[in-house]
Image (cartoon, rainbow, N blue to C red; front, side, top):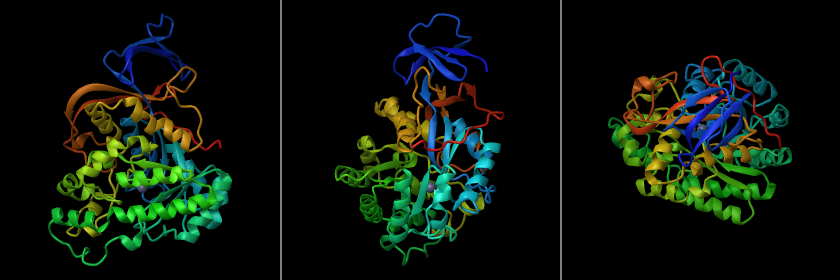
Length: 435
Ligand SMILES: [Zn+2]
């Protein structure tokens, strides 16, 4: 591997430094480094940021590779600054429920992923016998749905199942991630029949899954987490009320953290209704005031993950919005657009990077990872190149994205993993919690 030095690069978009890589690690980062660092790269005007660890993707392999797959998923992720991902136990088929499921997915990722990877295990009524095995195999955490997941094979975790899983996770030092929506508060009657207008259909979809459903489930999850002492991670928090509730839990001694996703920071219900099915997800997008509230409470968010949840185009089409597959494909452009939006708002990129890297590493018990000498050179560069995101830019298996047509000033120029530019030939390593 060639050593090199980035000259005059803007660290986090703040001070201008030279950054040298030796043997895949940062060897020196500072002002006016002398010569002798290997290949010289002029990086003037570029912004140096630590690689994204996307703790929430659905690459759907094995079993539903026709929805995405590890190869195209990791390709798209790395084009957006990603150097690692944690893959969810669904919607691969079979879901990851035991040691064998872990080993199978690990083998596939090692073969196909161009970036590092961790693997979530499922916490459902059907996986309880496999929890210990999955921990032995290095699972990054257990994921549970507090409402229907949309797939029969991945059942809802009621109080008993959740409490049991949390007990095991607490003992093994693992995170439990919850999709928090209380099924009893999700609207059912009348909504399913909305046909025809996607605009009206999307509005009904938003209305059918109110914030209260999210809050009620967070309350239950925190109550159970408080009893077990587990590390609870509420994934895809959509609303400032959710963040405030989680903060209240923290103050009461619950070990709880919050994830949000780029789409809850970038898209509101008005935009989502216009975009249509490509912006359908659960929990749903919220109104503009809530989106502003999320930016205002960023300090209460530990991690930002894409919840990249792709599907074939035919599953994103149809007359009835309720019957259309839910999920936003966003691992390629989410962080790039969040960077643009943060710059527009005057929020330091360092603050944001904490949420896509430092916060993830800490929460999931992984070491290292900071942008300093002696650490792995996992990074991406942003360059100023105003333009619009086009369909042909998309590197997913299916060219579906809620962000086509978006303007951005800064784009990801390239991503490096341990000092090597990520491309067809790079392969990632398995990441497992070190405790
Ligand atoms: Zn998800």
